[in-house]
Image (cartoon, rainbow, N blue to C red; front, top):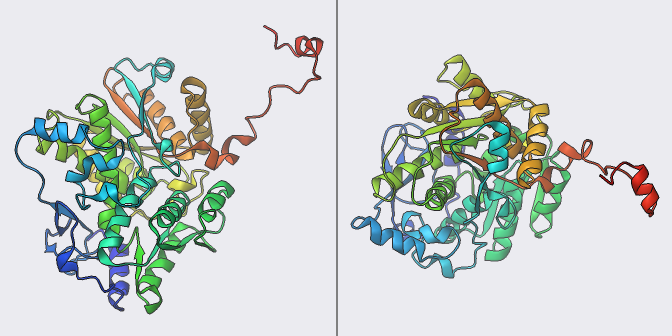
Length: 442
């Protein structure tokens, strides 16, 4: 068993009855049929649980997906709203989800990055999936939007999470919009931009002395205590539903490519959930006949200062050994990633890999993407672009194939990473002579 951390959390959760009053037997979450254990395959009724009672493996949503004419399903999706709810038939949400108060994320730009492609020597087509365009400027809006619907279905009154920053802001915004109380927990030393953005929505924001793994351990204790009664922790007891939001990245990428699979994807790895769900989404599109089945490769990207998954991949291990994070890429600074072993499985199954870059390479990549494509990425985007450049140099990425690189957040949240090297070119007096003297007239 590779899931000791999850098993511990499950045991703690079982020590107290924190299930809200809703009758889970009558829950309406659209095509969601059950929860299924990734390790042993045991199935459970839909409810606010996240770990298998038999083996403590992680649970994920199992579906009764639409059958029939793929063309009809394509037309239905294309006629839907310009957000993730266009894919409601494939998600654990009620059919009328678009009419409920939600922040409605998704349908972000897939940017054809020709300038960056020339810089990196890519000839087969390079695209940036830019999720900084979401309501709180990160991909976390997708997963929280899903969690809100599960919280409604199960009768929760408070939304909570442990967060490296972006998730805290997404929970605060979504809770405010949907009329929930929110109380979220973060490491005490997060980037100030993320702290302000999480606090501005009016919910409770609590800093915990320590790193993200310390915050997560605290939340596992809270969820197993009577203090947590009626609380929906989006990345704990709502995690199976929350995680499904990342599938919409796969759906959008393929639809925006003209209902085609990309050849190669580079995806940041924090907990690893995003990467595993993108793979799940691609497989579902193939199963439904919405895209033609063909090989694709998935590459995970980590920061060197918190690289437990890339280290395990490089060393040929199946077990991901925890690390103490020390990197400017704080949104990826999860030293004990819950889905790390599954990231390894997917990277090896698809012929991809997991690589890392150091902080200097992260900063260089942020500035490269900004200079070539006008996209200001947060540090996680610097990690994916930096890893893409490293994989191309090593030959692991084929420059002649269609490649999609994820930028999951806005650089305005991580200004400190580039502030020292991104200042005014010159400060001059307001005269043409001063402008000429500064050498800027050419």
